[in-house]
Image (cartoon, rainbow, N blue to C red; front, top):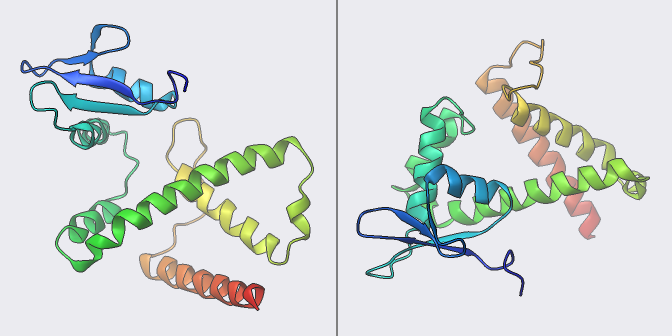
Length: 181
């Protein structure tokens, strides 16, 4: 197993300093964020107790980016996350989020792959609709990112967006039902 395949072990000392065990030096939260952006898994443990602190530090990194105005999470999503901690939905939310991000990663890699060669999926039934939905999703996700031009279209109201999402979900369920038969 190569060094980049196993998680980078970061130890937290009693002084709250973070120590990179591979390079034998101290690191900051920004350094850890850089490791993750470079595709490296990170594990942060308390030196004395051995407790895994990775989740706590990753949330702190996200909070710092959000507080600097580098917002990725819409307020509605943050509200839903807070609600999920106080409802029965808590058991579903982690799996849903994990699957959503896995689909996003897979989709991004497939987009890159499809741009480099002919696309045999174009003959698949419902491909155009799936492609349209993917384009709408990517457009929504990238709105407001630095270097990405803003759209001139007037934003839809929350009710219109919800209706459109429900319609798309219903269409996808119908298509999946026909494919499974």
